[in-house]
Length: 398
Ligand SMILES: Cc1cc2nc3c(=O)[nH]c(=O)nc-3n(C[C@H](O)[C@H](O)[C@H](O)COP(=O)(O)OP(=O)(O)OC[C@H]3O[C@@H](n4cnc5c(N)ncnc54)[C@H](O)[C@@H]3O)c2cc1C
Image (cartoon, rainbow, N blue to C red):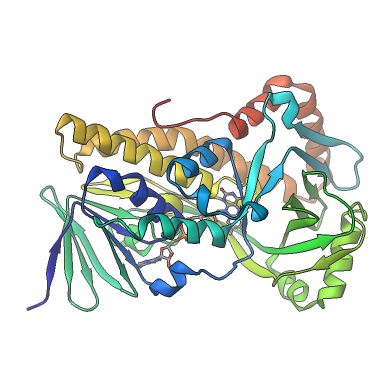
């Protein structure tokens, strides 16, 4: 007979959000299962994927609490002290300067594969967390009594709460009948790391050219994370450029501000599709990480929001445990949903509007872009709101 296993929580997906969420409940004694389709060797030593993740102060504080920060080598952490947004060839730039917010820096930036590795390292040794790797989920079902997850090898896992943290294209979300708004931007983002002659001065720069967007994010030393956003039909041409031609093109587009540039990693293309689930919960079930909100990367919020949501949900579960309430209770999940949606929805919608504005090549859009940059500089509330978003710490207790 096929094996049947009982847990308090089953998490589908061992990405940084699923693992971070598991770690945040590790000391509660809850029995937690994590199901992941990749083999354990990949979780332990994930390959570089080109993504460098800009982290807010809130995310850094959460990662420190979870012990993840200690697993990130100090010489792979970049610091963003200053950020500029430039519109085409216009000399005008919207400027964010950490010193004006009272903080020492706007955020740190860390390669995604190191975040994934750190997230694995902080859960792997807990006796109450069981990792099932290389498994395929074939069915998920929940009712008022329990949730049940079936694996391709016939095993079933039951739990009081089932969590889907299986990416923005979450198969579990679909199996549970939760619809999601998806926006395909018809564009591709190409990410890589580049070394350069001159210092980036810890400044992140986003240049909106009319045919492509270029972001340069400061990593450690004279290394930057380069993010090129381009129409999907032109992505293959950029991927096919020789490393030297690609590097010269990027240096040119950046006005040679960093001197000679050299490509020092693979180029990784990601199709740009943003996703917002129509609801984050149903009976004994919740979405976490990109499965709930899959952001366009331009405003660097995806993982930050995923970590925030995981932190809020684990806080609600802790309250439930203290009060003797069922951790899968609908009220517990509803509080998570409303707090996460209240924070994430304006950011999600605002990012999509920004992307449209900055990829529209019509003259009115260009004028509006320039006006938006000027207004952002002139109106202190707009600017300080964005700075607060980056530097203030917003935790579950807050
Ligand atoms: C180019 C780029 C740049 C970015 N930059 C930033 C940034 O600067 N700041 C920021 O905050 N965010 C950024 N992000 C977003 C960030 O990378 C994501 O939000 C984050 O990785 C999502 O983590 P996750 O755990 O929710 O999902 P994922 O990382 O997608 O992990 C999902 C996991 O689930 C597993 N899985 C999938 N299906 C199944 C299944 N059926 N069964 C079992 N396991 C399954 C997968 O193998 C994977 O391990 C960026 C994203 C991109 C693409």
